[in-house]
Length: 346
Image 1 (cartoon, helix red, strand yellow):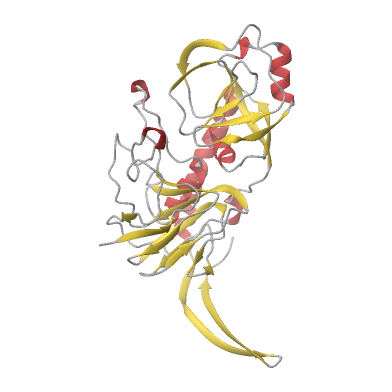
Image 2 (spheres, helix red, strand yellow):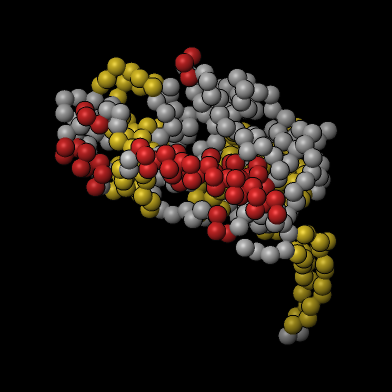
């Protein structure tokens, strides 16, 4: 049997893919990877379809032992991944052997890390998705986050693409302060001119009440004209609700399907991955752009994956066997293991 075993689950590790689309009319949340960019690139690096299921870890990744040889890649926030205690490169597909142990440290930058598997995760689809929606106990591994001792079977995919890497020019830089671009509406006319100015000119801090469902923000209150309640309507990934207390909430992957609070704006798709890598205490400011500009940025975002696929296909390292040396420096003896990699770093 090809499988992985979870020795330690980490802070919050779940199975995620593109999400459960097409069922919002029945009240079923979409869920899916919080950081679409990192999740898709992780799959590209191991030769999988971009929407294949991966493991998403928040702040601290799991400790995993492999019961078979496998090709994996790790993207997203930097949790200092290691195999058998030795550092391994991120944004690169690497081969692990049966009995190897993958482990992580708390994230030093970013907030979420993604692990893809060349064989794929043998998790049943529910409503055309393997994503975990923990609030509804739906999908993924038993509808919940991973726990110590869990075992996940791997699929029948090929072991391929070892040594594939993402050029450094494509790797996002994660920071504690970011500009987030939005399209105003659909209920921005429910706010005073002062309220709109407050929203677009203020710095907001992500509160401790931030999770996969939504990011509650701290900062100046946003003024309504005559109240925050509306007849419930649809909510999308990135909708920014402003309830009666005047503090914005950005709806994320595990959002509800509808809501009855005014929505002042919506975060554009490319910036949702930026938000997903921010953590409580980080700060953002909002910039309004036109719908036409948002469409241009979205096309640019999708075209980036085509470019990444092309580059990954043509560039890879060749990992040779570990070479062992005994060195003597200043009367001290050192044992040194060197993994030789052949390739060009772009």
